[in-house]
Length: 415
Image (cartoon, rainbow, N blue to C red; front, top):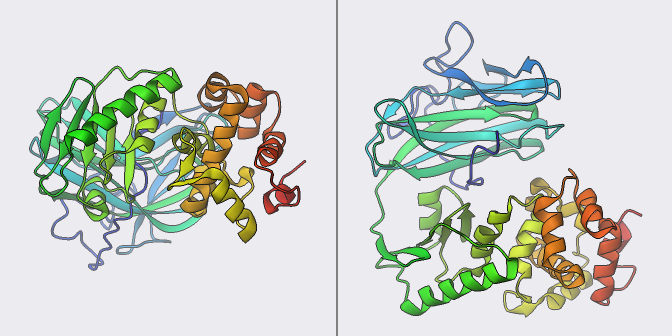
């Protein structure tokens, strides 16, 4: 099993004001888990095996009353390194029509969540569609999986019911060590956007009257695609789909993901920008496989250029050093760590470091570390590809930027 969902956490959180029932616009039965069956599971929901790893035990899934956001109950998951059968909870099917846009949202609280041994980084929600015979047509989701202990935070995903859809189902899953409580699941319909479609051999562009793309915009995006493929030595074999939104608010409402832009591998790009080089890099790079670390993955999308927001990397790094804000690279390894710091710092720092790595040993060595390495830690991946670890490469990167040896990041770097 691999990661179940392609979408990241969204900022749209719809909290229930009614402590006992789902809101009128939610299609999902018993989404706050207030109705409990005799076996301790949510009434109408079923358990299925969502993942298997090395271990004999099954993960624990049950309705609990020790923590909740909407009403008195939540759905509780627990597993550890000895768990081998990771259970997912699946909702009753709800009727849908092809072409309907649906958004699934929830909140999750975690305690000591950790990725151990051969586990998968999944602790989130999913949305699936099936036809009249019960055959699956589409699955998408928000895999969650932020390690550590976190208070209630939002999860969301959105999808359009494909042709032949008769039913949709929500699922909740966790395949990581630790504890997780899920609550306030909601499934709502959104009116479709009035997309205008322009199809080319390599890409399909979607825009609206309020967010028009010019012929020059499309031509530049297609040129960027060819340039990125040539630089990475990778080629997208399927058409890419470029969705252009009026503004950030509209994009968040219809995708469930906050932010100005995001890519959904292998072939979707959602953005408020008429030309988006950064997310296009993510799509092409995904042909080589998933990046092992956001420091390298996001760094590549930024580092293929020589600047960030109109200024060279050196401008930003010097500013961070002067302000005492330059982070140690080891603090940007995991998604949790990367997201915990300001994006206006992490992105140019990651881009500068990856640009240095590519200049140092070329693209092939960088891809070996980022996508093809067999180690489970960033330091191990870099040692496998470059022969030296993160600490030494960080010192070399600092030297290439003429940073003083007593910069905050250098001082914080382990030997």
